Image: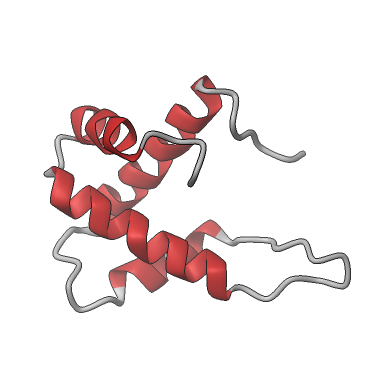
Length: 91
């Protein structure tokens, strides 16, 4: 997340989802852990299943949000990254 202003991202997501910034930050930390531990294919590409990601985050004992809130946070993060030209969806 080096090209992204983390504070700006958290503030954006918090504003979009009405979830406290500390909880947003916690979800993003668990998301990063999940992605960093994902296994890549022969080309080193990692395919992240959003349902598995949400399940992983919901399974962390310190996450006190419901599934919809977690999904909203992840969707808002993607919206932010797309607006900044840093991410997009693969067909």
